Image 1: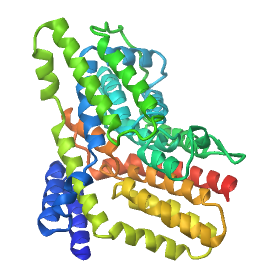
Image 2 (image 1 turned 90 degrees about the horizontal axis):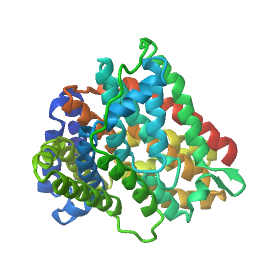
Image 3 (image 1 turned 180 degrees about the horizontal axis):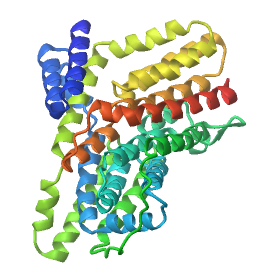
Length: 422
């Protein structure tokens, strides 16, 4: 059964790379095969799907549709253009902006909020938006590990290791993982400048857009505040972020209906929902649940520890770079959940502090998703947005941006964590 599950999983990825147009169908097909064959028991179906992420995507998409229609992204694009020397610097600023936001709220929500601004910039400049939107997505993923509230894996580590918000900045007299991630983010700036070195055309907004409705912007700001606040709620429901996004989406719709007294905007928002992205993520969640159930992720974890042996440097190196590779193809949440107790046991047997390996695991697993367009939910959302705009992103196109981003950020974080925590 384990071999069968691995074959189906690999076949799904091969098809996604070779024929990316039908990615949702491949994911859904593999999910159905897993359920019919018993790789994933039917009674584990609902628990394998990350409802929190799906609810966040749907809720945020509704608010973002109103946000786009309000022309606020266009105004933000005008301001950004006035403060940038050329297109290359616009991309740098957009990437850093998304990274900063992502350090405090979920990566998917960040992409869905920031990408419309990037799209508005590209439309004004009449340039291909693929590079800028993918840079926004990978920058969002990059800084998710910076704080306790930036990513699900960060929350998991904080809960498991009894770390609080400030421990990510400074702990046990040493700088925390926040600084490793931020230095990694700065290391990506030269990468962006190199990748977009030819985009030197000067930019300036000819005229500033007039915003037609400020309610969606207020709702997005409320959402950011609510998501940050929810991260400090002890024993919060696992779907709290999704619930927040959906409630605010419903409030946005209700306010619009009261003000406009017609359903045109509501119908438009529902029609514009990116159902392909929702279907793709649902299928991927089921498939990842299947290979987790089959024990494949446990085998990967055991193999990494076995190869590391008794050398803490070798083990740390394998944990970081092995996590990058594994998280490029599987959801980092079950992987991190599997690895944390394994690393605790290994470090106890070696008589060393576990934090070196904890931080190495978190940085590698969080950043590894940037290697492929389906390695992280934020990437899936970004690719889905681009497809709606008529731009199909191939694996090759994504890797041209994701690979150098990942290598630069991980290398800097890898060295920083080893220097301060070894």
